[in-house]
Image 1 (tube, one colour):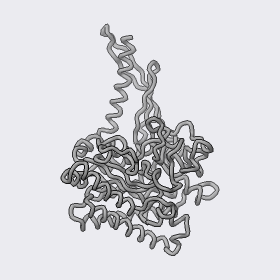
Image 2 (tube, helix red, strand yellow; image 1 turned 45 degrees about the vertical axis):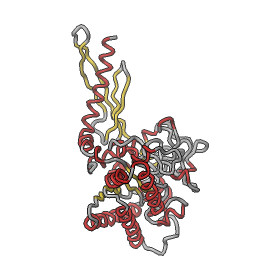
Image 3 (cartoon, helix red, strand yellow; image 1 turned 180 degrees about the vertical axis):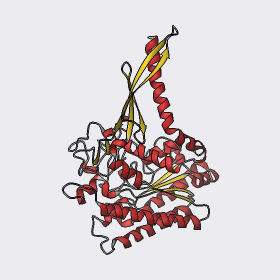
Image 4 (tube, helix red, strand yellow; image 1 turned 30 degrees about the vertical axis):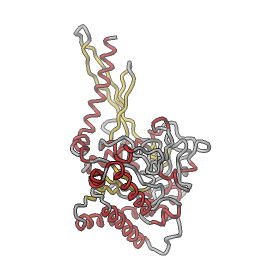
Length: 406
């Protein structure tokens, strides 16, 4: 029994040691910032919508299985994934809380409000027409809810503390993909614009939103880039031909729009006193994950007697290796310990885990007609549009490693 306890302790210790090696840079960055962020406030689309669409009349919902199957208690909260989404992961990294609730959740507590909520609505974009087509909240609608939120926290905590929350909190904005993927390339409603003109229109809407948010008190704003929409499963199905290839034109549109958004953000940082708007490139790391899925994933660390443990990593360090260590038993003898370390990369990135993975998203990803894959951890995408929790974790870790949490 003594030896078994020592061996199990050694297995756990190795996991902890390797985990610390991987995340020490992230932890070092977070140490100096978590004390400065009282809350996180989130705007955008389905990537960061934790359930606001549940409360509005739209078909863009996912508050049913198999969505949320890896969320605590297997709850289908309205998050467009199998588990946590980027806003949850970032809030946890900041030391604020593990889950960012939907502002329209009827069960919000005072603590929820004071530490941050999400106003995001699945299927919206910077272009208000994008949201109107799908009958979801526009970005302006989200700002109206934010104004209401400000009054609520003022009533809870008083004017001084409320002002501090508003001025010192993190603001996360993730949207824009639906403007290109849905409104421009899929529907005829903006056909009077060529691509260049439409991108300029999107940037104008985005700039107005950033400035309106700034005028309402936001200062520390994170804006992520539009992802590589031509490489996501839904667009490969719609426009990638019979082989479902990547759609270069769609990715080029995303990179052009990202470049213009970045220029506009740089301009705003020079013209808005005290503004700290950080543009973060999500496009590049996500494209690499999609193109090289086997290079990203987790280490599985096993001991024959005491099983395995997993920890997340950003990129592959090794495919498989054997490592030895030792422990001292109660007689002062050295006990050899052998660990088997195997890297478990993603296996699938061109289709989702849900159903066939070719067309299922929102209502078509359901427990009646679209049984999910047995192991979502092998998939980059949960449905044809949204990543699995594991992929989101890796993506957010890479962004934090590059940009920090300032």
